[in-house]
Image (cartoon, rainbow, N blue to C red):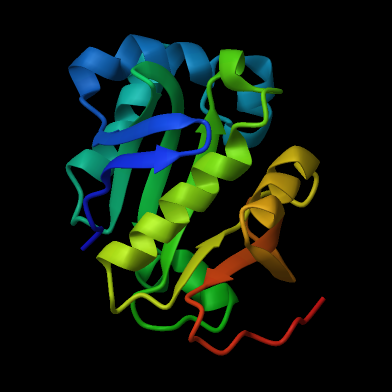
Length: 188
């Protein structure tokens, strides 16, 4: 249900997205989840079992979400979750369209502050739209207080169309649409 993404050229270097391998990637991802700046937005700090359970819910699930490790020029640079937004509980909070795809972003602590988020998000969104012709939009819903994330999505071609009250946060609904798709009206 989520298209494979593979290798993507970006202005920052060669980006490889591969599905997380729980055993091989667990220590790395647990370390990132325990970074205080990451925990502020992801709330997954804890022992490896906490991260493993979060990954297992996706890896063993129904294919609506895929956890991926981002390697930039071979170096682990981030963790992304690609998901079917129209089949997610999020769909109850915005006017969902069939095959909407969503993404969550976690840049590795060492990758932050280097201007990488926007080019990576741009490349990933473009690839998702290219590989899934039924998808007309890619969206994200960062916490409205996460200003660097909201700015990165905007620089990557996403438009903030609404602020949503979700069960765990107030989110900025950011949408990047296929060029030939009519936009949603802004509701904020």
